[in-house]
Image 1 (cartoon, rainbow, N blue to C red):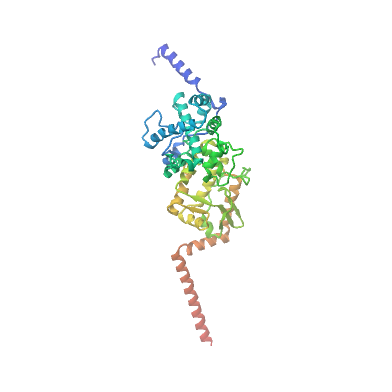
Image 2 (cartoon, rainbow, N blue to C red):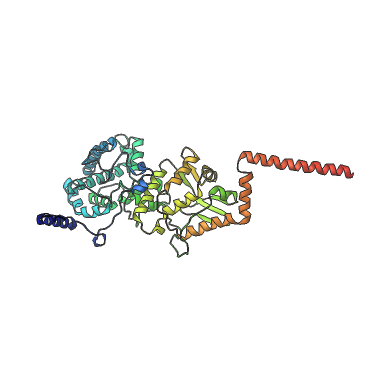
Length: 432
């Protein structure tokens, strides 16, 4: 083999050394706080639109800056962001120099929050962070003063645009580190009639998902998607993982099967979706409102857990949705839960709701289940497999599964009864 000239080898060594100089190993980084991720392709392929902003791009992953985007909505919103930036500066004592100086100090920390490749140089990267952060803060401030802005603000005066921005702000790939928003908000020292922290503004903005009325004290989300996950986590019962011989769940009987076996479904008063309770043949489940946007919301929280939480036993939302997938197989299962007011279905029909639940956990790693859910699933399966309940379920399924089967079963019973009565009468007349 012909050897390469020494000059080529020296150049290669120099290039490799230069490349390695800027590489920081995770274990060597003091600011290794990756929390914003590109959704893995194997998960994204199930529904790419659920992870992609439609109206507004936040952060570097989907930013049209520096490239020509084929999404006209994203390009139009870039112009609107600058108006919001100017509005934010006008209401504060800050100037552009102040923002650039402070955000430049945080650049490495901000970059380390993004797990995917960020190709922008420092100038463009800082521009994205400053414009997007100031847009969000100004938008939240205007939203909190809706009555003052609804007539002349281009977003607040357009209901469909409000809804679309809300949906884009929950996307995992469409996030800014929360500390950036808080720091800029605090730096601005905005004079308000009622002084509020930025986390308080954020809780108010996302209040429709804060069913447990979680308060801002001690709350330090990594970003908006993480905050929405926090809204779902249990706060009134112990969800800690206890040592158990089995942490995998491979099967749970469906809602319709359990119902046919005599299990009673009741709606729980708890506001935490994860708070399931099974006792003495009664399964209590909190009310779950299913909307057209539910899939988008749940998919991004699932993706965050998949990318961020290495201990699968702590992926609580994944566990909840996996068991819900076991329980709901068909539209019949959805109808049972709708009848019991456990599910409020705002989607087009029961089949669409069942399909959504069945598709949510596709290609998501099956988690190790916490002890509470393992015990619950064993209890549900044990109830169904009790011989008395099992044969009752078989009987109900075979003879009372549809209106036609019910009618034919009743007709057959009546026919047998009338035949028996006729036979008894005949025998009685002969004896008499």
